[in-house]
Amino acid sequence: MAETKKDVLRPTDAEAIRLGRTLLRAARHAALAVLEPESGWPLASRVSVATDCAGRPLILVSTLSTHTGGLVADARCALLFGEAGKGDPLAHPRMTLKCRAERIGRESEDHAGVAQRFLARHPKAALYADFADFSYFRLEPEEASLNGGFGKAYRLTREELMSDAAVARALERAGPGAVAHMNDDHRDAIALCAKHFAGVAEPFDWRMTGIDPDGFDLMVGDRAARIFFAEPLKSAGQMREMLVQMARVARGREAG
Image (cartoon, rainbow, N blue to C red; front, top):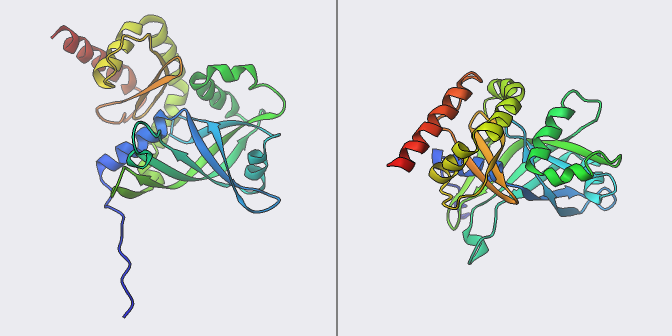
């Protein structure tokens, strides 16, 4: 009698979805795997990464790089997210995201928005982003394999990882202005949110880099923090109310 193969995957729950979205949104770099055009062999490389408002990964790569040729020849690719941290690297969460790559040409109507999201996350990339041999790619997720540590394996769908598409489109227009306003006038509130919602005790001079339907991202130097809203935005109009409410709660916790 054939031995029944044991299913090692756990049922996907809200905690696994939150972990997957955190790994995706908080990442500043990832390992990119493509198929080398000449040999067909897998090829892995490290890339800087950001996400668009819906959660799709964005990368900026040179046409002189072998992995860029792989993306052009075969759009199938994968990204590995997750920091090793201290101790056994296999005890830390990581996620492999299967994607299909789409080059965002400079003539594309999406180019300005993609560039804004990426450069907010990687401001030093502005030094070479406009070089003729560099291009942005948007990676459309298919599904993900999440490992939350020993014995914590999950399969996540695209829908479980991505934010609400309609709200994301509206925030693509409204978000940059709100980010600029928070950075210009409310850095104290950003710092308090980092302390009370991201658990960062150090008094860093955080700046906001992007808002999406599920939360917002912060940066200081090369350090990143991710803060989720109590619940996803149902419309772009809720953004201001949610930010004001979180700042009020953070101030209350600081005073109490």
